[in-house]
Amino acid sequence: MFKEDTLSKKTILITGGGSGLGLSMAKKFASLGANIAICGRTMWKLEEAVEEISKAGSGVKIKCYKADVRNYERISSMFDEIIADFGTIEGLVNNAAGNFLSASEDLSPGGFKAVVDIVLQGSFNCTHVFGNYLIDEGREGTVLNMVTTYAEGTGCAFVLPSACGKAGVLAMTRSLAFEWAEYGIRLNAIAPGPFPTEGAWSRLVPEKTLEESFKNKIPLKRYGEHEELANLAVFLMSDLAPYITGECVVIDGGESLQGGQFNFINELMPRDQLKEMFRSMKKGK
Ligand code: HXC
Image (tube, rainbow, N blue to C red; front, side):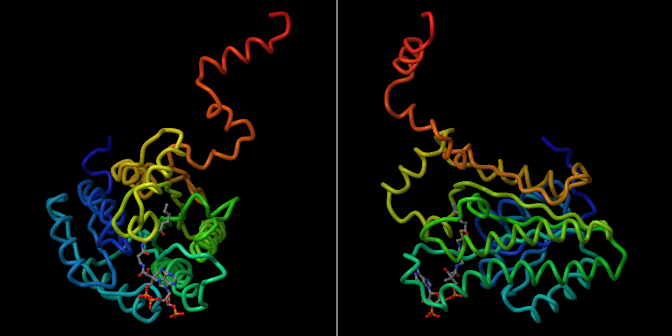
């Protein structure tokens, strides 16, 4: 889909890049020539990820940094290290997230804070440090924020802290896309539907029955492939999308289109019977 040098000469930091979708994006970026920095809280996981990423991208530089996105001081010192290691940095993917299922009346303030701090404060911390670096250096750059389909519109039951945090990240994406356009900084978001990962599935899809109903409510009747999301991320991070900023691209097999008022009727009877019913209702049949 992309030429091998689509991301060459770019250094990109992916937060939470040691596993899940972050790792899949890192591998894809590396295979297209990007130098990769990943950060996370668990060093052994990051080191294993570096090995894996290096198999995907030959000749690119890959480094990992132990950092919790909630800690502004550490994020600031990590960016200093990245710039010392790579010379420069052009891209940031705010991918690190936290989430768990809970009835909202049972949430503790600490539980709410943990998720919102990772998702919203963490994305702010990284974006703020990165943005200031670009502005001070007079360089252009790109930020990609991983949000969710429930960040806009519906919100979401049983994942209240995540819904609040991701809505904030989407607001940040659009606010800064406008405000920092004059510095040549683009910010976009991706809203993925269900893409199976160990981190998300262990916390959000604990049972087989839940997994089945999850899949059945997706119009395309399947989960997303990591490669599909990684391709979209490449496009938005690359020089192929220089005029796209402040956009949120949904990639969910149509899952978020469920609200259409008449959508439910194809569950009532087979399509042939439905068509028959429509024909019988047609004037002058
Ligand atoms: C209720 C919980 C809880 C749970 C933790 N807490 N898990 N409350 N139900 N299952 C509460 C704790 O009791 C504590 O509250 C507070 O949260 C902080 O918990 P810690 O374990 O001390 O925090 P920490 O180690 O920082 O862990 C943060 C975390 C954890 C968010 C709670 O789950 C985590 O590290 N997650 C990272 C990975 C992740 O979540 N990946 C999935 C992302 S998927 P008190 O009151 O004692 O302080 C995603 C996409 C969504 O976001 C879309 C999918 C379709």
